[in-house]
Structure formats: structure tokens, C-alpha cells
Length: 144
Image 1 (spheres, helix red, strand yellow):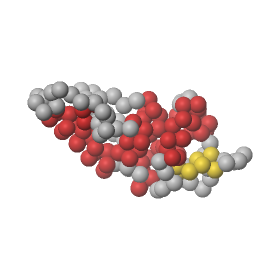
Image 2 (spheres, one colour):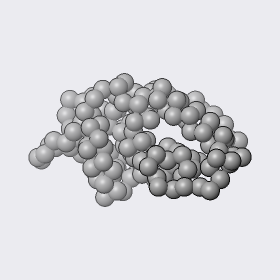
Image 3 (cartoon, rainbow, N blue to C red):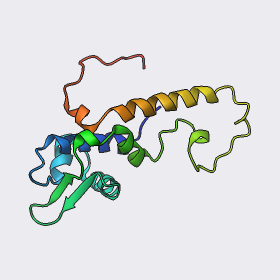
Image 4 (cartoon, rainbow, N blue to C red):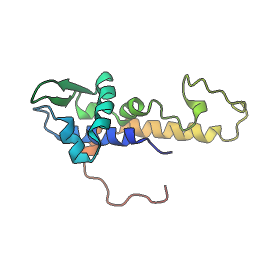
């Protein structure tokens, strides 16, 4: 399963914002420059993040964004649900998708998608934005 650029950029930007001390707002231009994200795209992402209550904006010359909640209280599941809309790997698992599959009751692969979604949802629910600030392992599994 592949996440969208919106999710990748949104998580990276939120991690960058969480890395600041929180004493002053951080401009999107500063975050975008440090993370190599187009500022126009980041502006769109932060509209959604602000509406969802993850960040708050401060207007003015020294304005920008601050986390609305501590990084330890923001799960990656919450963020990705906001950025992606759904973590369902298949349309038939999306709530209110309006998609109906003729095979839903006898689908031989549906079990796989349900297990995959449950595992991913559980893992992301246990990880917080603060976890992104800790050093990560140097080696990542290549066969995933």
C-alpha cells in the first residue's frame, strides 16, 4: 500500500514543527524549505491539519503555526486519517465509500485486507508524533 504525497509531506512537516520548542510560531516557508516541500502544497495540507485541531495558526509578521496539542498526544493514526481520509487498503473496507462489491460476502481475499488494515491501524495508533523525533534505525527492511 502506498501513501499519498500529502501524507508523506504532512507527517514530515508535523514532525518538523514538533521539533521546534513551541515558544514561537514557525512559518510554513521555513518548514517547507527545511523539508523540501512545495510551500503551496504545504499550505493546503495545513488547512486540513488546522481544521482537524492538530495545529493552530498565529497571524502577523512573526506568525506561523504551533502544535495545538503536545506531540505525545497526537497519534500517527489520527494524522493519517486526516491526511488520507481512510487507511483502508481496498475500497470495500472504506466506511461510507458507496462502493459495493458483488463478491463482498464470498471474497477470498477480503480477509487479507481486513487483517492488514487492523494491523496498520493498531501500529499507527501506538505511535505518536513525538516518536518521529527519536533517532530511527539505520536499516529498513527492503523486502516490505
